[in-house]
Length: 290
Image 1: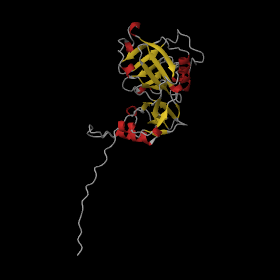
Image 2: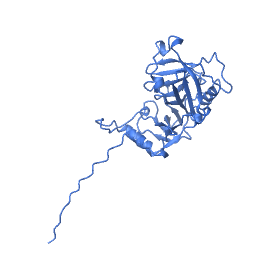
Image 3: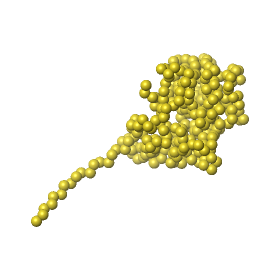
């Protein structure tokens, strides 16, 4: 007679889903891409604080070329932040009608409000978008896109930088810039040239006192925030130059990050949302280790 004994093995509990921050922290080196020093715009405020902007030449090449020429020509030295509108934008620059533009600046750039979809490797967001037929990511940037029209555009997410302009047909030179400090004003998409994003020092803009005049303009020049200088990263000696990386939006790590943003299963969450807004899946950027 054969006797059999049964051994019960307790099933291992399912692996706890990683949070978006855990995915970013554990991202392999291959999931990151270096930002070129020529794509860094470093703004030093007179109070010693610094703001760093990554430029998006793939989407607004003429405006970005203007911005580089303006930086090399020290055009913003002595200018100010003069507008801070609550839940909207911070704006800075010089009066373009009074100060001569440096050599090489195109006074009337084309309306770079969208670009051809051709040549972009797009990772779809996977969820509906209120302001574009489709939304996703390309080259490290959030985009709205239209496959029928064959166009793509950068979006006005928090921290993104656009070019101030007058009424159309004016497109702005790039001398007047603003950064979004509130709920993403996506209605501005495809109406203004978006030229980059703040990747460091955003708190130094969003925490500024709000202007009390219409549209958030400061009432008097005494309230303006002086700008000491604005330089390209490539103009700063390598030893002193800040270096950054962004997460490759075509990587499997980024795909996992977006999925986690849409399906939060942290202990705090009672139920996952099952979707995510384009601007709430911000592309991770980190300072590169020396």
